[in-house]
Image 1 (cartoon, helix red, strand yellow):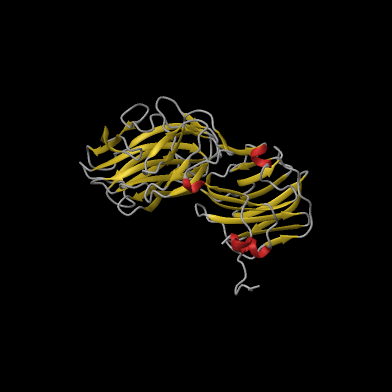
Image 2: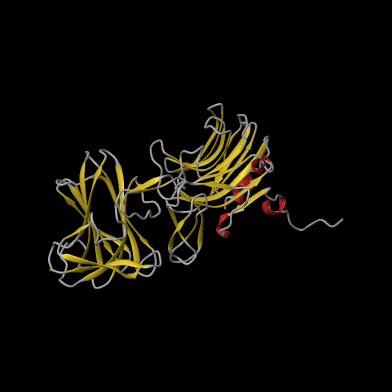
Length: 418
């Protein structure tokens, strides 16, 4: 007998019983997707935003690199803006500028973006729409801008007394200055995302103080921190969205009425679940990301093996700026393993969770596993991806998921989460 000169690695010792790779943009037939209506969008492999019909998966691609980010799973959201891509149409109004429709290629690949032309230089150029919002509620406003002779865009949120202004540098894709209108709002933040071909999606998140009509301005300017724009300057505009929530979600196109994108419900049930699941012990290894760090009592669920309720679960989720692995039986926590210092909004994390009676462990991004040596394993009959029984949506991407029918060792969990 010849003794090997090396020890088998963790990868060589075990193979997953279930291996889902959503970065291939294909759906395992055992996975079902339910989403009502044909109102959802994604970025396709060509880098353009496109509509995805009901009950179909949304494999989302980076608009610049064209690399697949994985399976996009989002909660329900509503675009409160009307005529989201027709800025020459009511209820949009303009100031000292004109809007010429359908002049250049937009982020959806069609020739339907509008040209914004300043017709009288100074401080009065804008496109504006008004919406009545709920009090003490977070909202996010987004709009796509592209530079032409004007290289800065500005978004202003204003309730008639207070508000905030944010500038965006369309030449280098950075957030610029901010300015308060009187007292301004709390929890205001801004973000800019590159959508290729010089298009940027610019967003402002704010929390309202009272129920009132909010006026929302979009304009181009000559410089950071200034509302002045030279006569004749031009820029391109498309795809405005106003949604209740503390972060932006995928674009929801509207015409004459507001429109809701329903939630993505992704599951494995029946024999599609039981054929690979080991009730007594096992391990999940998953790669995922979410758009915004959850705070307070919010949870962004990556996966949950459960019985159709929230009381018997084996979970991987993001909670309070942490990635966690948790197990509950009858609503009583058996293990709650939260890795600190590893959550970053939008960044992919790799989480490994092993379970067995009186033996639980979790590792995130190859950190030393957290363990719990006391507890039982729940009886479950399904796997929810990106949600838990229709609540606590991931609002992000799942790239890959592997399941092992044995409780991997702590060293293996650490190795697999690298």
